[in-house]
Length: 358
Image 1 (cartoon, rainbow, N blue to C red):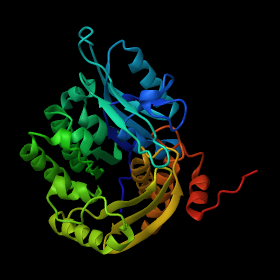
Image 2: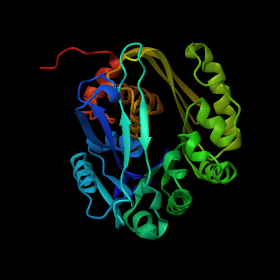
Image 3: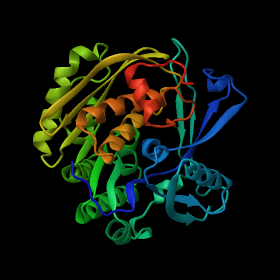
């Protein structure tokens, strides 16, 4: 995949930033916890963390509540993760006005699954508006190698849907590659199925990299595929391939398709695999055992590793290996995002080398 050569940003991600609250006592449920760990989070910055920690220039397009201490916490966190940001400051409008969304989640343990409660009332990210960003400057003057879009932001509100669509059009105009992680959420699509289906299909039609699971491809794009949540994923790989072939026929502009494979043995033990189609060449990682501290963000870590490999100019086989390992890495952190020390650490995970490095 040939990337734009004159650029300021390796990766641009639009997102709605929020906070996640997790029990300090790892593995304990929220309803029995009175000490909570607060982190800044979003699916899209989870993705961007991989190339950002590994030294590539990354920028976040978002929006903030003006004067909010939570907004300041988020800004400080993004800077600590080597990401620059740009976004409007929106007045709170009083106690019942705008705020950053809250993700309340525990990690689960053993046979007790994780529980997630999203509190998104008044979410300032729903106001993301294309008019607040100079797309000609960002994509034309500064230059971008890859724009990464998420279906979470694409479906958040009519404004954010238009924002993502205009970003995709600007990226296409100025020669940036487009990565689209479909990220279907039923509650976001309720009552907007026809509208969002049209928008998602247009974004997919100009995308270069398309990421999703079996449910995403079927529910966002209407492509028939295997049933979600199957227990023996390894036996379903040919069905996954057939689904991706169908997507490729419908969206011939896309040259890279990626799909994670996960089988949950219990909360702390998963089988983790992946499928990549790059051009006409398949790369399959059959599910391998991984140990899980917190599963949230594993899929985002996979996408971050995939994009990092593409940005670094590696061969496709290394893209999916690195992505598998960055996804596995993310599940070993209490944050939603993996924080790789260097590329060697990621490759050690791929090789299964967990020995002490002195």
